[in-house]
Each structure stands twice: as C-alpha cells, then as structure tokens.
Image 1 (tube, helix red, strand yellow):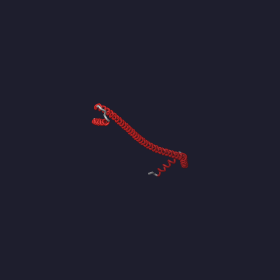
Image 2: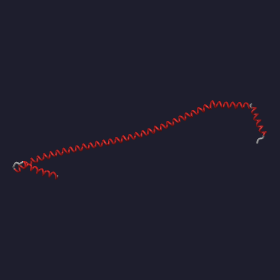
Image 3: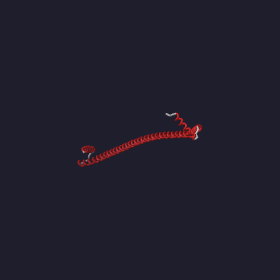
Image 4: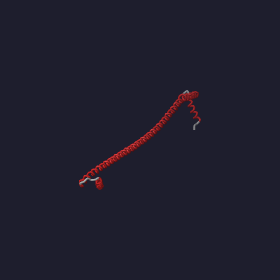
Length: 184
C-alpha cells in the first residue's frame, strides 16, 4: 500500500518530467484532437476505400467462383449427355448390325431355298427326260423284238406269221422280258 507521500512524490516526478519536456495539458489535448482528426481522416481517406475495394474484389472472386461452379456443372451435364448419346449410338449400331445379320441370314436362306428349288426342278426335269427316253427305248426295243420275233417265227414255222400270231408272240415275249427285268 502506497503512502500518500509516495503518491505525491510520483506525481511531482511526472510533473517535473513534463515541465522539462515542455509538455502541457493543453498540448496533450491538442495532440489528442489532432490524433482523432488524423484517425478519422485516415479512416475516411484510406480505410474506407480500401475496405470497399476489398469487398468488391471478394464479390468478383465469389462471382468468378460461382461462374466456375456453373461451368463445371454444365461440363458435367454435357459429359453425361455425350456419354448417353454415345451409349445410344452404340445400341443403335448394335441393332443395325443385328438387323443386317438377320437380313443377310434371311437372304442366305432365300438363296439356299431358291437353289434347292432349282436343283429339285432340274432333278425332276432330268428324271422326266430319263423316263421319256426310257419309254422311247422300251418302245424301240419292243418294236425290234417284235421284228426279230416275227422273223424268227417265220423261219421256225417256215410260213408267214399272221397278225394275230404276231401279236400273241409279241405279248408273250414282252411278258417274259418284263419278268426278267423285275427279277434283276
């Protein structure tokens, strides 16, 4: 605890120091007023414009960040859209390929069916021609057999064979010949 005398001594020391430095209470007040005016002036002239400039910069940065985020979102949407379009194009290409394969398969089947039909028609026509040729050959053979039979019969009998005899001999010969053909 301080003594009153000590307090007075401290005050008198401070007062002596102020007097030696030539500092008065009016000078202190004037300096305080000058400091306040300087502070207000600096606030109005420097701090406020600088703060306004910083705020504008922050707004610009936020605006640029927002635009960047919007552009990134748009890029993502475009990428997704492109991927979807690519997937759809692949599906369409696969469908077109499958359709082309099916059409080619049907075309091949049609060509095969047409070739089989033509081959069958050719075989049928050839068989018909062969049957006709066989019939002609059989008729020619029958005629030759008949001629040979008549001449053999005339020589064996020593006389001319009549039509009825000729027919009877031909029928018998053909019957024997048909039976021989069946057994072969």
